[in-house]
Every structure is written in structure tokens, then in C-alpha cells.
Length: 211
Image (cartoon, rainbow, N blue to C red; front, side, top):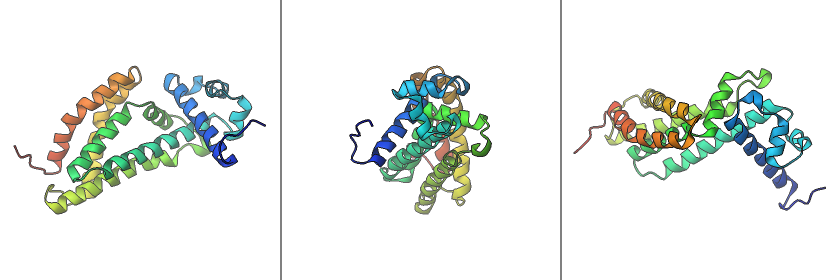
């Protein structure tokens, strides 16, 4: 039995599982879904193929684990960014920036691929489904506070949040397309778009810019 350095078997299993998912993420980012095998994942992770099967019954379940990890990490990162901002405009800017940068990532490419593949009994990941709802809730919370304080004029925060989210997703399409060939260039595009998209969103929310 391999020597386990972690304090417990549970911690060891969590570490190995994450290692496999991240290895799969690197492979799926550079090849299409069909081209990646579990043997490839095992080699990338530095383990045996049997080890992969000890954690995932097939490639579809491994891919869904990747999608779930991607959404959980993004929502956690976004939550920390939003919590660190002092005012509604800062929170909305953080959401715009994080979403556009996420569109440039290999994790986002995996989520896009998951929408195009058919999985049988696991055709949809709950994490993927919940991501957009969570982002909309972050937006609605910031918009609600801004409306109460007079920064925005948005009497229907939930509807406004959905419109803002649609704007961000539309702006992120070119970023996502570029990321398939050049992730660093896509990240630069994402950063440049923040300053162009944010004023439009603030205008949509009824914010009057003061010179």
C-alpha cells in the first residue's frame, strides 16, 4: 500500500481525486472530449489507470467532476471578490471582471463543452446549472443596495440582474472564442472589455456619471 502522507485516508482520497480532476482539465483544454481517454488522464496525473477507476466509473463522471470543481471554485472566488468591495459599483465591477476573465479560462471551455455533450443519466451537472443563478443573485444584491441608496434607479433588481448578466455573457463570447487558441490573449481582451462594458451596465442601471 502506498505511503499516505496526509493525516487521514479521507484527506488522501480528496487529494488524489483533485489531482485526477486537474489532470483531466489540462487534457480537455488541449483536446476535444472524444480524444481524451482515462489512460491519458492516468498518465498525466502520474497514477495507474486502475487508480482512476477507483475514483470515477467512466470519463463522463470525471468530466462532470471537472465541471463541478470549476463552478465551485469560480463561485467561491467571485464571492470573495464581491465581499471585499465596499460599494455596489465596486461589486458589479468585480463581477464583470471575474466573469470575463473566467470566459478566457480552460475551466470555462470545459463548461461550454458540457452543454454540447449528452451524458445519459448525468447529462446535466447541478454545479453548471447553479453557476449562472448564483452570479445573478450576486448582481441582484448589489443592484438592490444601489437602488436603496440612490446610486442606481432599478426598481426591479432581479430583472435588472438578469439583463446585466446577459450583457456580460454577450461581451464574453469573443473572449471565449479567442481562448480556444490563445488563452493569454483572451485574458488581455477580457481586461480591456471591463472598462468598456462597465459604463454601459451602469447606464443601464440608471447610474448618472459625475465628472
